[in-house]
Image 1 (tube, rainbow, N blue to C red):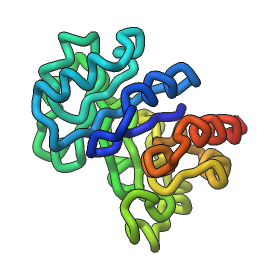
Image 2 (cartoon, rainbow, N blue to C red):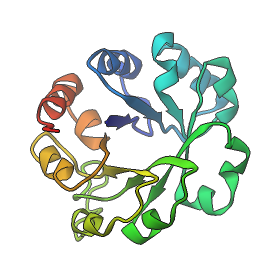
Image 3 (cartoon, helix red, strand yellow):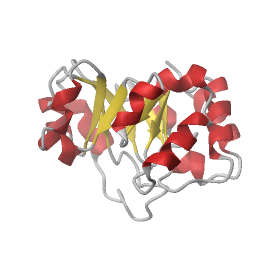
Length: 194
């Protein structure tokens, strides 16, 4: 499974790129736009082809979901701890973890969880420099929740990630910091050996 996470700020031609990513086989897109207001989020979603709306995951503006056939929601670690996800029991929910111990404690209500940073981050300079997460994944004992690796993943190291018993990867910096996001996505997809 390949997931792409949107950049926090709006990028030029972003929704056009998103539509093309879906056409190239993107599984899910996480919309993470913490700084935009309701109407901007609505406009953003409307520019994504409606046939892909069921593959969108909202990080905020959850109330827009019913207008757009969206049934997937992501909750940050802090939101999970605060019980924010409890009213979404009939939906598909995901969360984040920053160590394997936290991941192993998640119950089956979560479809998957991001674990990060696997490698030094591309978009957050200096973040994840001393990460051991790729090694720690070997201590995974939770098979009820899919493990999605995040952080510093690119076309050159994506196979190394899949060799470590993950269920998928999430791409962020490698896509949005590139002049040719579609080409990068294709290379990442082509380099996965299942």
